[in-house]
Image (tube, rainbow, N blue to C red; front, side):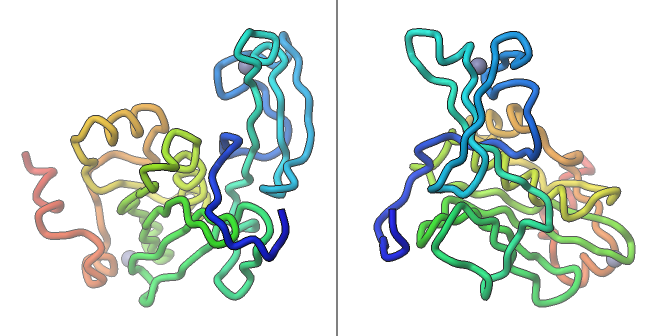
Length: 205
Ligand SMILES: [Zn+2]
Ligand SMILES: [Zn+2]
């Protein structure tokens, strides 16, 4: 794969958020029992792991890549290059407004998470997560939610009410939200219109 490649990309190897050495594979195996092998994904520019317990089974699976969700690894638009899986930070226009983080590989954007952070009141609201339908179930959502949460450590997190469609419920049931689905905006976030009026009412019934 070269930098001149402008073709459509996929998340061929599934991803999960994390840094350092994993203790379990994404499919639940304790790696201390089954064994693990580490390599490097040239495509993602991230560490790649093979669960030997998974790989010994007939499906020969067990390969995944870990994407470091910490802010130090986020890049801004002017730092984006064509190499590797990137968490691209798009800052809000106003301090407590809605910003986003996109997961990209080359020219392909797999999805994004929208969030609002108020550093004065230390409140964070996860506004929306959207993964392109054809790239779902590869771990992009969990990487984006972890990247959002990592930007507001020790903040009081809430989320907008989650969609009640089966795909959305299954996603949040698997991934876990950073806070309760009852948005608790500060005055700056209200001014920035982070929470739509109908969502503010949702907590009353
Ligand atoms: Zn496994
Ligand atoms: Zn505030």
